[in-house]
Length: 301
Image 1 (cartoon, rainbow, N blue to C red):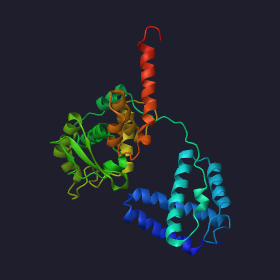
Image 2 (cartoon, helix red, strand yellow; image 1 turned 120 degrees about the vertical axis):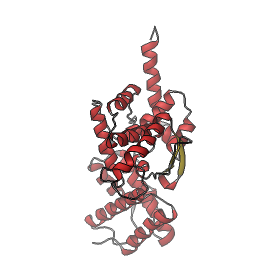
Image 3 (cartoon, rainbow, N blue to C red; image 1 turned 45 degrees about the horizontal axis):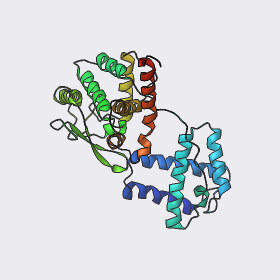
Image 4 (cartoon, rainbow, N blue to C red; image 1 turned 30 degrees about the vertical axis):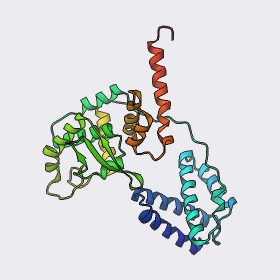
C-alpha cells in the first residue's frame, strides 16, 4: 500500500517551504526529509496511509517503534517535532488533519550533562599540536578558533576567508535558521588564523580557487567529517583518553566562560541559541565545578 499522493505532495512543498521561506540550513532540511521518509516507510510497511488523515493510534505506534529500536529520547523528540511541524503545514495548505501529532507527548528529556574538556586538558591539546608544516598550522587555527568562539563545526566549514576580521578580533558566523551573529576571539586565535592565511592556506590550495576559509590537503573546502577526523588526531596526539566529539569544544567554550564569571545571556548570544533554556544546561556543569572547588578548598568540607 502506498502513502496517499496528497500527503507526499504536501511533504515536497513543505521541504521547499522550510528551505526557501524559513531559510533553514541544507543540513536541517535534510533532517526533516529523512524523518518524513522514515514515517512514510513505516506507514507503507504497516499497510497504512492510504487516506490523507493520520490517526492518533498510527502516530503512537510509530513512536513505539522508535522506542523499540533503542533510539534516544532526544532523537525521538526531534522526530515528533519534525512530523508535528509538517502536519501543521499540511493542515494549513492541504486541509490534512494534524490532530494525531498534536496529541503526542514528547518523551521526558534525559538528564545528560554536556561533556567538556578541563582547562588543563585544553592546554595539553594546544601544546601537543604545535608545528610549522602547512597541515599543522591549519589544524592549530581550527582548534584555536573552535575553542575561542564555540561555533558549531557546520558553521566553521561554512566560513569564508572574509568572515574573520583579525583587525577587530571578530568573526561573522551564519548559524541555524540563517541567523547571523558576530563572535569575538582572542589574540591566540588571531595569531593562529593570520599565520594559517599567510603561510599555510596558499600552499594547501594547490591552485584551487574558492573562498572557503578552511581547506583539506587536496585544496578543496573542508567538510564536517574532515574536521572531525582532524580533531580526533589532535586529541590522540595529546594522549587524552576520554571519548571525543566535535561538540565537546562548543561545550568547553560555554562551560569555561561561565566558570570564569560570564553571564548566561552573553553566553546564549555567543552560542547563537534562540532560547535561554538551551544554554541553561551548562549551569549544571558550573554548579558541579563550584561544588568540587568547595570540597577541595574548604577546611571543613
